[in-house]
Length: 419
Image (tube, rainbow, N blue to C red; front, side, top):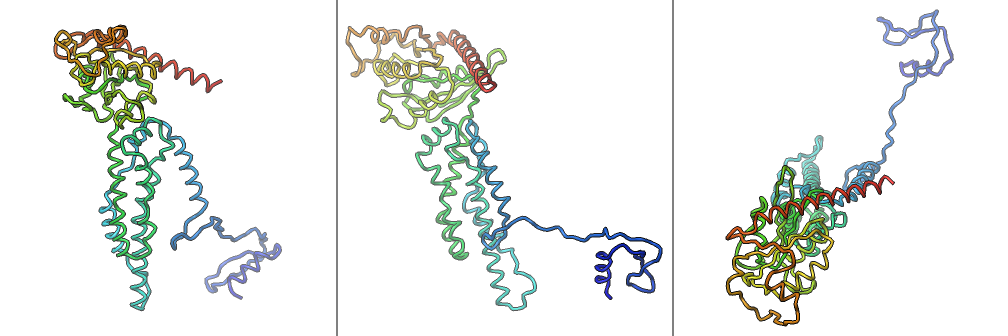
């Protein structure tokens, strides 16, 4: 009787007066009288219960994959806050992805133990092709999963994507995976396809660089937004008031994006944004730079510093500035507001008269605006430094009020959640 059979018999027999033992003279089992053994000995194996599915000749646990996907989808649905652009993954150029994949695939060796040379080489080719597919697919899949879906972004960041990159370009770069789907056609075919379709990855690289360079806005920090027609002196005031260093030139639309700076008053930090200028036209005719300004005012809780230039040097007539001002004031009147007339040192000189200036004497409000600007406006000059100290004090008061408003709104939201 073999050991296995003897052991099986003993495990299933009733209690007996024998005990297992061992003998140097015999390798089998022997029994010692006088001892009782109860059949409590059991032998078992761990049973594998995880289900698998075959994907591209590889086994993938289906349950774990679905759970991870559900968790990732849930986490993606909670991205409705600012700062998503700073979490974008680093994107490799398409040439580097392909070169790295080819290099790693060439190092794959055939399965050991295949004596036939032809079969061994076919096995090597299949394994290298499979490795090449995986090495190319992994980074593409990573980009697709880690670039946030636009619908989960904060409305401000969605506006930045649409107005900076163009409508649809973001989604198009994230869905071009033709290279991954056609890898089975062979290594050479893969190289040709990926070299051609690699433009989508390079476009994604450009998108990541552009979005990562976007200014980070802290929604809980009071923000001062400078608004006005092009070339009225907004950038110069940002340099005076904050740490921001925007480009300053004497031509329209110098500011070609949202520029951020910071102000420190009495150990308190505030934000300042310089926005592109607005022209007198309807929203349908505005360019993306003007729409960026409107997006900031629509989606961010900012205080507004509206800048007017009545000297005529900015290129936009006072009459047109008045129309723009009235429109923005009516649309965003809920924001805290401060008016500034820039270049006041030039108001004593002969002013430029525009064809579009309205000389209607019955329009009292416009006539007063063309001379002094809006009621309560601060007159400042960067050249003579007139009014700058008063402006800094008023800006500090404005931002302090904005901070109180933000804290009040946050407290109200917390009370609503509790109740």
